[in-house]
Image (cartoon, rainbow, N blue to C red; front, side, top):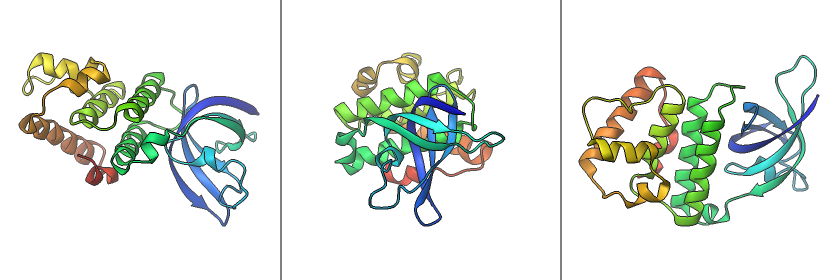
Length: 208
């Protein structure tokens, strides 16, 4: 079966001598583990489409009885060059991708999370990092995954809390820095990921 879908590359890892296993978060089919054959060779035609933080229009082939599609073609919609030129932006983009990856089961479509990630990457490409972006993104991803803290009884003031959950990215950027509030929110995240999911976010050490 051949099918096409829009997708964002969350991560990649080597397979054998010349292939890659690439985690692609697609709009209609959810998170897929995809084999990109030959892309580690110098002349690999689909190499650009297999790089992390790439948004593309992909074509996949899925053999009958398999859950492991092969990428057979596609086109790049954006490689987010502004993000790639700046380490701080790239670390935050990778953090966005890891959060989505951790919160998304395989082959479970979530258009809300897809649009959240795509919108956050476009915002980061255009304007760069800001104090509350990481926390606002994670709060929204948790809410779409069914683990939200929006109804938390104690903690931040209501209008501020609502802005983190539902404001535009420009509104989030305009929020004043408050380290005490940030520490409270980071504590919620630390307890959730370690106690509920049993994972540590590897990219967290590289973002503010």
